[in-house]
Length: 103
Image 1: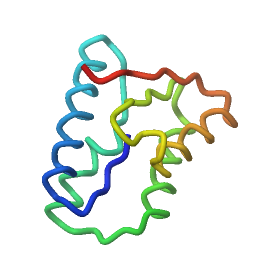
Image 2: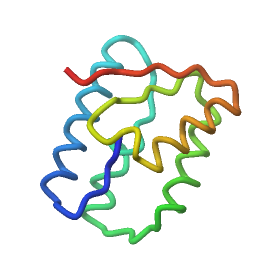
Image 3: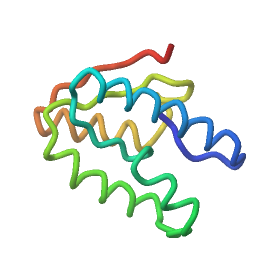
């Protein structure tokens, strides 16, 4: 799902949506790492000033330990460089990919 946007309201809305799905997955018994859920508040409150590459490198460390990559199909997910990079990595690593439509 695309995360960054010039409008902070949209960024927060995206955080809320992905975090709801993350909580649903936890309730279903999955043990997940959600980059947006787990890092949004740290970045917002303490302004890490990380570049896109820094976040990708950090996410890759977690992804290579995963068995499944869940992709939340919110508007713009196909255009998101981060999402597409995660999908590419998952395919190279042989990680199963599950796509989720937001309800």
